[in-house]
Image 1: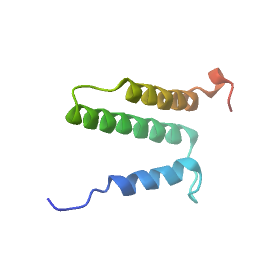
Image 2: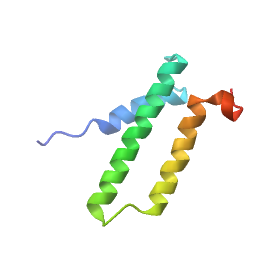
Image 3: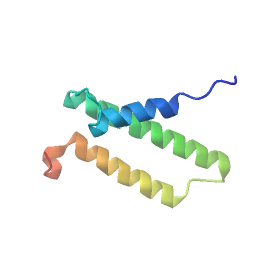
Image 4: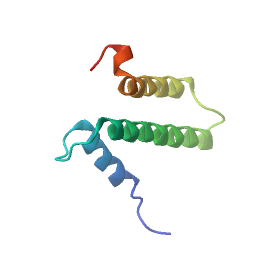
Length: 84
């Protein structure tokens, strides 16, 4: 109804917290929860937009989302991927 979307500000705020440029530190479990929520939100927006504009979802979009999922998976299970 004429109001600007707050999604960009919300995402910028979350990005600052997750990349460590914020003055606040988060417990690991909360950071992982934010990262997975951000990923799920991005998947939903990209797929919805793609479906609205065309007849299906491009395999390129699926590949990009798989790469992002791998990043989130490494955050969830650092002991499995060897990262800490």
